[in-house]
Length: 377
Image (cartoon, rainbow, N blue to C red; front, side, top):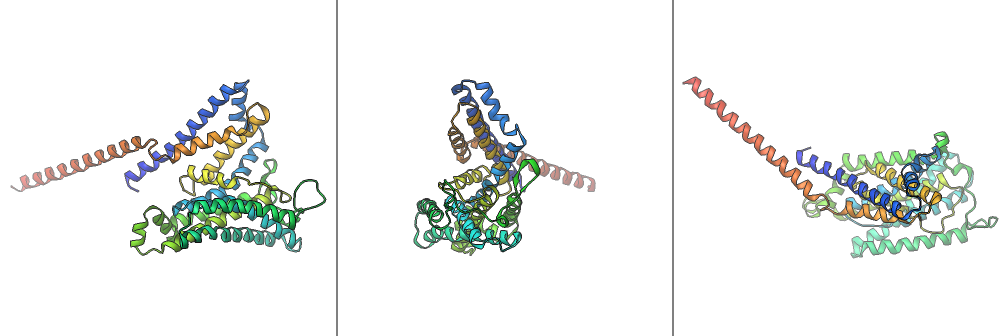
Protein backbone atom coordinates (compact mmCIF):
# COMPACT_ATOMS: atom_id res chain seq x y z
CA UNK A 1 0.00 0.00 0.00
CA UNK A 2 1.54 3.36 -1.02
CA UNK A 3 1.80 6.36 1.28
CA UNK A 4 -1.02 8.31 -0.42
CA UNK A 5 -3.44 5.42 0.02
CA UNK A 6 -2.49 5.12 3.70
CA UNK A 7 -3.14 8.84 4.20
CA UNK A 8 -6.52 8.62 2.47
CA UNK A 9 -7.59 5.69 4.67
CA UNK A 10 -6.37 7.40 7.84
CA UNK A 11 -8.13 10.67 7.04
CA UNK A 12 -11.29 8.76 6.13
CA UNK A 13 -11.32 7.09 9.52
CA UNK A 14 -10.69 10.43 11.22
CA UNK A 15 -13.54 11.99 9.20
CA UNK A 16 -15.99 9.36 10.40
CA UNK A 17 -14.88 9.68 14.02
CA UNK A 18 -15.10 13.49 13.88
CA UNK A 19 -18.55 13.32 12.25
CA UNK A 20 -19.83 10.97 14.93
CA UNK A 21 -18.19 13.09 17.62
CA UNK A 22 -19.82 16.30 16.33
CA UNK A 23 -23.23 14.62 16.12
CA UNK A 24 -22.80 13.18 19.59
CA UNK A 25 -21.77 16.58 20.96
CA UNK A 26 -24.84 18.17 19.36
CA UNK A 27 -26.95 15.46 21.00
CA UNK A 28 -25.48 16.22 24.41
CA UNK A 29 -25.97 19.98 23.96
CA UNK A 30 -29.55 19.41 22.79
CA UNK A 31 -30.28 17.24 25.80
CA UNK A 32 -28.78 19.87 28.09
CA UNK A 33 -30.92 22.63 26.59
CA UNK A 34 -34.31 20.93 26.39
CA UNK A 35 -34.27 18.66 29.45
CA UNK A 36 -35.45 19.62 32.91
CA UNK A 37 -32.72 17.47 34.44
CA UNK A 38 -29.90 17.63 31.86
CA UNK A 39 -27.12 16.04 33.92
CA UNK A 40 -29.19 12.95 34.68
CA UNK A 41 -30.42 12.68 31.08
CA UNK A 42 -26.91 13.00 29.61
CA UNK A 43 -25.65 10.37 32.04
CA UNK A 44 -28.43 8.01 30.97
CA UNK A 45 -27.77 8.67 27.29
CA UNK A 46 -24.04 7.99 27.60
CA UNK A 47 -23.93 5.25 30.25
CA UNK A 48 -27.49 3.89 30.19
CA UNK A 49 -26.82 1.34 27.41
CA UNK A 50 -24.18 -0.28 29.66
CA UNK A 51 -26.16 -0.08 32.91
CA UNK A 52 -27.23 -3.74 32.79
CA UNK A 53 -26.31 -7.00 31.15
CA UNK A 54 -29.65 -7.10 29.38
CA UNK A 55 -29.09 -3.69 27.79
CA UNK A 56 -25.65 -4.70 26.53
CA UNK A 57 -27.33 -7.73 24.99
CA UNK A 58 -29.93 -5.40 23.44
CA UNK A 59 -27.15 -3.41 21.75
CA UNK A 60 -25.74 -6.56 20.18
CA UNK A 61 -29.20 -7.86 19.22
CA UNK A 62 -30.02 -4.57 17.51
CA UNK A 63 -26.67 -4.55 15.73
CA UNK A 64 -27.39 -7.93 14.10
CA UNK A 65 -30.09 -6.73 11.66
CA UNK A 66 -28.08 -3.54 11.11
CA UNK A 67 -25.14 -5.72 10.07
CA UNK A 68 -27.15 -7.67 7.50
CA UNK A 69 -28.72 -4.60 5.92
CA UNK A 70 -25.41 -2.73 6.12
CA UNK A 71 -23.76 -5.53 4.13
CA UNK A 72 -26.67 -5.36 1.70
CA UNK A 73 -26.03 -1.68 0.97
CA UNK A 74 -22.28 -2.26 0.69
CA UNK A 75 -23.06 -4.22 -2.47
CA UNK A 76 -25.37 -1.50 -3.76
CA UNK A 77 -22.75 1.17 -3.15
CA UNK A 78 -19.97 -0.97 -4.62
CA UNK A 79 -21.60 -0.87 -8.07
CA UNK A 80 -22.85 2.71 -7.54
CA UNK A 81 -26.54 1.77 -7.67
CA UNK A 82 -28.87 3.19 -5.03
CA UNK A 83 -31.22 0.25 -4.88
CA UNK A 84 -33.16 0.90 -1.64
CA UNK A 85 -35.30 -2.24 -1.75
CA UNK A 86 -33.47 -3.66 1.28
CA UNK A 87 -36.04 -1.97 3.54
CA UNK A 88 -39.02 -3.82 2.05
CA UNK A 89 -37.04 -7.04 1.61
CA UNK A 90 -36.22 -7.15 5.31
CA UNK A 91 -39.90 -7.10 6.26
CA UNK A 92 -41.23 -9.32 3.47
CA UNK A 93 -38.55 -12.00 3.88
CA UNK A 94 -39.44 -12.25 7.57
CA UNK A 95 -43.07 -12.64 6.52
CA UNK A 96 -42.27 -15.35 3.97
CA UNK A 97 -40.02 -17.23 6.38
CA UNK A 98 -42.79 -17.22 8.99
CA UNK A 99 -45.34 -18.43 6.45
CA UNK A 100 -43.01 -21.25 5.38
CA UNK A 101 -42.30 -22.24 9.00
CA UNK A 102 -46.01 -22.40 9.88
CA UNK A 103 -46.84 -24.50 6.82
CA UNK A 104 -43.91 -26.88 7.27
CA UNK A 105 -44.60 -27.38 10.97
CA UNK A 106 -42.45 -29.40 13.33
CA UNK A 107 -41.69 -32.28 10.98
CA UNK A 108 -38.10 -31.24 10.27
CA UNK A 109 -35.15 -31.23 12.69
CA UNK A 110 -33.91 -27.81 13.75
CA UNK A 111 -30.76 -27.63 11.53
CA UNK A 112 -32.70 -28.60 8.40
CA UNK A 113 -35.58 -26.29 9.26
CA UNK A 114 -33.21 -23.38 9.85
CA UNK A 115 -31.43 -24.00 6.56
CA UNK A 116 -34.75 -24.14 4.67
CA UNK A 117 -35.99 -20.89 6.21
CA UNK A 118 -32.70 -19.09 5.54
CA UNK A 119 -32.92 -20.19 1.92
CA UNK A 120 -36.52 -18.92 1.77
CA UNK A 121 -35.42 -15.55 3.13
CA UNK A 122 -32.43 -15.28 0.79
CA UNK A 123 -34.40 -16.33 -2.30
CA UNK A 124 -37.15 -13.85 -1.40
CA UNK A 125 -34.52 -11.11 -1.26
CA UNK A 126 -33.01 -12.15 -4.58
CA UNK A 127 -36.36 -12.23 -6.40
CA UNK A 128 -37.45 -8.84 -5.05
CA UNK A 129 -34.11 -7.13 -5.71
CA UNK A 130 -34.19 -8.39 -9.28
CA UNK A 131 -37.21 -6.19 -10.04
CA UNK A 132 -35.56 -2.74 -9.71
CA UNK A 133 -32.18 -4.12 -10.82
CA UNK A 134 -33.51 -5.47 -14.13
CA UNK A 135 -35.78 -2.47 -14.73
CA UNK A 136 -32.73 -0.25 -14.36
CA UNK A 137 -30.51 -2.46 -16.53
CA UNK A 138 -32.99 -3.09 -19.36
CA UNK A 139 -35.27 -0.05 -19.38
CA UNK A 140 -33.15 2.62 -17.63
CA UNK A 141 -35.85 3.09 -15.00
CA UNK A 142 -34.94 5.30 -12.04
CA UNK A 143 -33.79 2.70 -9.55
CA UNK A 144 -34.31 4.94 -6.52
CA UNK A 145 -37.95 5.65 -7.38
CA UNK A 146 -38.68 2.05 -8.33
CA UNK A 147 -37.15 0.61 -5.17
CA UNK A 148 -38.89 3.13 -2.90
CA UNK A 149 -42.26 2.36 -4.45
CA UNK A 150 -41.47 -1.35 -4.19
CA UNK A 151 -40.85 -0.92 -0.46
CA UNK A 152 -44.38 0.43 0.01
CA UNK A 153 -45.82 -2.45 -1.99
CA UNK A 154 -43.92 -4.98 0.11
CA UNK A 155 -45.12 -3.47 3.39
CA UNK A 156 -48.77 -3.74 2.37
CA UNK A 157 -48.21 -7.16 0.80
CA UNK A 158 -46.72 -8.39 4.09
CA UNK A 159 -49.75 -7.09 5.98
CA UNK A 160 -52.07 -8.82 3.48
CA UNK A 161 -50.22 -12.15 3.88
CA UNK A 162 -50.38 -11.78 7.65
CA UNK A 163 -54.07 -10.92 7.68
CA UNK A 164 -55.37 -13.49 5.21
CA UNK A 165 -52.88 -16.37 5.18
CA UNK A 166 -51.48 -16.80 8.69
CA UNK A 167 -53.34 -14.63 11.20
CA UNK A 168 -54.00 -16.25 14.57
CA UNK A 169 -57.65 -15.54 15.49
CA UNK A 170 -57.08 -16.56 19.12
CA UNK A 171 -55.08 -13.45 20.02
CA UNK A 172 -56.42 -9.93 20.36
CA UNK A 173 -53.72 -8.17 18.31
CA UNK A 174 -52.66 -8.64 14.72
CA UNK A 175 -50.22 -11.54 14.64
CA UNK A 176 -49.50 -14.82 12.92
CA UNK A 177 -49.75 -18.31 14.33
CA UNK A 178 -46.80 -19.09 16.65
CA UNK A 179 -43.53 -20.18 15.10
CA UNK A 180 -42.85 -23.91 15.54
CA UNK A 181 -40.26 -24.73 18.19
CA UNK A 182 -37.89 -26.12 15.56
CA UNK A 183 -37.87 -22.73 13.78
CA UNK A 184 -36.89 -20.53 16.73
CA UNK A 185 -33.29 -19.39 17.06
CA UNK A 186 -32.23 -19.90 20.70
CA UNK A 187 -30.60 -17.21 22.82
CA UNK A 188 -26.91 -17.57 23.68
CA UNK A 189 -24.42 -16.11 26.18
CA UNK A 190 -26.61 -16.53 29.24
CA UNK A 191 -27.99 -13.34 30.78
CA UNK A 192 -27.03 -11.29 27.74
CA UNK A 193 -29.83 -13.13 25.86
CA UNK A 194 -28.27 -12.58 22.45
CA UNK A 195 -30.01 -14.29 19.57
CA UNK A 196 -27.91 -16.96 17.88
CA UNK A 197 -28.36 -15.18 14.56
CA UNK A 198 -25.15 -13.42 15.58
CA UNK A 199 -23.20 -16.44 14.31
CA UNK A 200 -24.89 -16.18 10.92
CA UNK A 201 -24.09 -12.47 10.85
CA UNK A 202 -20.41 -13.14 11.62
CA UNK A 203 -20.24 -15.74 8.84
CA UNK A 204 -21.89 -13.25 6.47
CA UNK A 205 -19.36 -10.52 7.30
CA UNK A 206 -16.41 -12.87 6.74
CA UNK A 207 -17.86 -14.21 3.48
CA UNK A 208 -18.59 -10.73 2.14
CA UNK A 209 -15.13 -9.45 3.11
CA UNK A 210 -13.51 -12.37 1.27
CA UNK A 211 -15.72 -11.76 -1.77
CA UNK A 212 -14.93 -8.02 -1.79
CA UNK A 213 -11.15 -8.20 -1.37
CA UNK A 214 -9.99 -11.74 -2.23
CA UNK A 215 -12.13 -12.75 -5.21
CA UNK A 216 -12.25 -11.60 -8.83
CA UNK A 217 -15.93 -10.70 -8.67
CA UNK A 218 -15.28 -8.32 -5.77
CA UNK A 219 -12.60 -6.56 -7.79
CA UNK A 220 -14.95 -6.29 -10.75
CA UNK A 221 -17.67 -4.78 -8.56
CA UNK A 222 -15.38 -2.12 -7.17
CA UNK A 223 -13.97 -1.25 -10.59
CA UNK A 224 -17.44 -1.01 -12.12
CA UNK A 225 -18.62 1.26 -9.33
CA UNK A 226 -15.55 3.50 -9.16
CA UNK A 227 -14.56 3.71 -12.83
CA UNK A 228 -17.17 2.32 -15.26
CA UNK A 229 -15.30 3.55 -18.35
CA UNK A 230 -12.15 1.66 -17.35
CA UNK A 231 -14.24 -1.42 -16.50
CA UNK A 232 -15.87 -1.32 -19.92
CA UNK A 233 -12.50 -0.92 -21.63
CA UNK A 234 -11.20 -3.97 -19.72
CA UNK A 235 -14.08 -6.08 -21.05
CA UNK A 236 -15.90 -6.51 -17.73
CA UNK A 237 -19.56 -7.46 -18.13
CA UNK A 238 -21.05 -4.26 -16.73
CA UNK A 239 -24.72 -5.24 -16.67
CA UNK A 240 -24.09 -8.72 -15.28
CA UNK A 241 -21.78 -7.47 -12.53
CA UNK A 242 -24.17 -4.70 -11.47
CA UNK A 243 -27.22 -6.96 -11.39
CA UNK A 244 -25.50 -9.86 -9.59
CA UNK A 245 -24.09 -7.50 -6.94
CA UNK A 246 -27.58 -6.19 -6.22
CA UNK A 247 -28.99 -9.72 -6.05
CA UNK A 248 -26.38 -10.70 -3.45
CA UNK A 249 -27.25 -7.59 -1.47
CA UNK A 250 -30.92 -8.51 -1.59
CA UNK A 251 -30.14 -12.02 -0.35
CA UNK A 252 -28.31 -10.55 2.66
CA UNK A 253 -31.25 -8.29 3.51
CA UNK A 254 -33.51 -11.35 3.25
CA UNK A 255 -31.27 -13.29 5.62
CA UNK A 256 -31.41 -10.37 8.03
CA UNK A 257 -35.20 -10.29 8.08
CA UNK A 258 -35.34 -14.05 8.56
CA UNK A 259 -32.87 -14.07 11.46
CA UNK A 260 -34.67 -11.16 13.12
CA UNK A 261 -38.02 -12.95 13.09
CA UNK A 262 -36.64 -16.34 14.13
CA UNK A 263 -34.38 -14.89 16.81
CA UNK A 264 -36.40 -12.12 18.47
CA UNK A 265 -40.08 -13.00 17.93
CA UNK A 266 -42.36 -15.92 18.60
CA UNK A 267 -44.66 -14.98 15.71
CA UNK A 268 -44.84 -12.46 12.85
CA UNK A 269 -46.25 -9.16 14.19
CA UNK A 270 -44.89 -6.48 11.89
CA UNK A 271 -47.67 -4.25 10.59
CA UNK A 272 -45.40 -1.35 9.64
CA UNK A 273 -41.97 -0.98 8.12
CA UNK A 274 -39.17 -1.84 10.53
CA UNK A 275 -36.83 0.86 9.15
CA UNK A 276 -33.94 -1.59 9.53
CA UNK A 277 -33.25 -1.35 5.81
CA UNK A 278 -32.69 2.39 5.99
CA UNK A 279 -30.67 1.85 9.16
CA UNK A 280 -28.44 -0.40 7.07
CA UNK A 281 -28.04 2.46 4.61
CA UNK A 282 -26.59 4.59 7.40
CA UNK A 283 -24.38 1.73 8.59
CA UNK A 284 -22.93 1.35 5.08
CA UNK A 285 -22.30 5.11 4.93
CA UNK A 286 -20.52 5.04 8.29
CA UNK A 287 -18.48 2.00 7.22
CA UNK A 288 -17.61 3.71 3.93
CA UNK A 289 -18.73 0.63 1.99
CA UNK A 290 -16.15 -1.53 3.74
CA UNK A 291 -17.82 -4.78 4.91
CA UNK A 292 -15.12 -5.29 7.55
CA UNK A 293 -16.20 -2.08 9.28
CA UNK A 294 -19.93 -2.80 9.02
CA UNK A 295 -20.18 -4.59 12.43
CA UNK A 296 -18.39 -1.67 14.11
CA UNK A 297 -20.76 0.86 12.54
CA UNK A 298 -23.74 -1.35 13.40
CA UNK A 299 -22.71 -1.54 17.06
CA UNK A 300 -22.21 2.23 17.18
CA UNK A 301 -25.66 2.93 15.75
CA UNK A 302 -27.22 0.33 18.05
CA UNK A 303 -25.51 1.93 21.06
CA UNK A 304 -26.93 5.36 20.14
CA UNK A 305 -30.39 3.86 19.60
CA UNK A 306 -30.43 2.06 22.95
CA UNK A 307 -29.20 5.24 24.63
CA UNK A 308 -32.10 7.12 23.07
CA UNK A 309 -34.53 4.45 24.30
CA UNK A 310 -33.15 4.74 27.84
CA UNK A 311 -33.50 8.54 27.76
CA UNK A 312 -37.03 8.26 26.40
CA UNK A 313 -38.10 5.82 29.11
CA UNK A 314 -36.42 7.57 32.04
CA UNK A 315 -36.68 11.22 31.05
CA UNK A 316 -38.61 13.83 29.14
CA UNK A 317 -36.87 13.51 25.76
CA UNK A 318 -38.77 12.17 22.71
CA UNK A 319 -37.20 9.25 20.87
CA UNK A 320 -37.41 11.17 17.58
CA UNK A 321 -34.47 13.39 18.48
CA UNK A 322 -32.12 10.56 17.50
CA UNK A 323 -33.25 10.97 13.87
CA UNK A 324 -31.70 14.42 13.85
CA UNK A 325 -28.42 13.02 15.14
CA UNK A 326 -28.37 10.33 12.45
CA UNK A 327 -29.03 12.96 9.79
CA UNK A 328 -26.07 15.04 10.96
CA UNK A 329 -23.77 12.02 10.85
CA UNK A 330 -24.84 11.13 7.29
CA UNK A 331 -24.43 14.72 6.09
CA UNK A 332 -20.92 15.03 7.49
CA UNK A 333 -19.70 11.61 6.38
CA UNK A 334 -21.25 11.88 2.91
CA UNK A 335 -19.81 15.40 2.36
CA UNK A 336 -16.60 14.68 0.43
CA UNK A 337 -15.14 18.13 1.20
CA UNK A 338 -15.59 17.71 4.95
CA UNK A 339 -11.95 17.73 6.14
CA UNK A 340 -10.96 17.66 2.46
CA UNK A 341 -8.41 20.45 2.92
CA UNK A 342 -6.79 18.50 5.74
CA UNK A 343 -6.46 15.43 3.49
CA UNK A 344 -4.95 17.49 0.65
CA UNK A 345 -2.41 19.05 3.01
CA UNK A 346 -1.39 15.61 4.30
CA UNK A 347 -0.97 14.23 0.77
CA UNK A 348 0.96 17.34 -0.36
CA UNK A 349 3.25 17.14 2.65
CA UNK A 350 3.90 13.44 2.01
CA UNK A 351 4.66 14.20 -1.64
CA UNK A 352 7.14 16.93 -0.66
CA UNK A 353 8.85 14.58 1.78
CA UNK A 354 9.02 11.89 -0.90
CA UNK A 355 10.54 14.29 -3.45
CA UNK A 356 13.05 15.54 -0.87
CA UNK A 357 14.05 11.97 -0.03
CA UNK A 358 14.43 11.10 -3.73
CA UNK A 359 16.56 14.20 -4.33
CA UNK A 360 18.73 13.37 -1.33
CA UNK A 361 19.31 9.85 -2.64
CA UNK A 362 20.14 11.22 -6.10
CA UNK A 363 22.70 13.65 -4.65
CA UNK A 364 24.21 10.84 -2.56
CA UNK A 365 24.57 8.64 -5.66
CA UNK A 366 26.26 11.45 -7.63
CA UNK A 367 28.68 12.11 -4.78
CA UNK A 368 29.52 8.44 -4.44
CA UNK A 369 30.20 8.25 -8.18
CA UNK A 370 32.48 11.29 -7.97
CA UNK A 371 34.35 9.73 -5.04
CA UNK A 372 34.82 6.55 -7.01
CA UNK A 373 36.27 8.42 -10.02
CA UNK A 374 38.63 10.38 -7.74
CA UNK A 375 40.04 7.19 -6.30
CA UNK A 376 40.60 5.73 -9.77
CA UNK A 377 42.57 8.80 -10.81
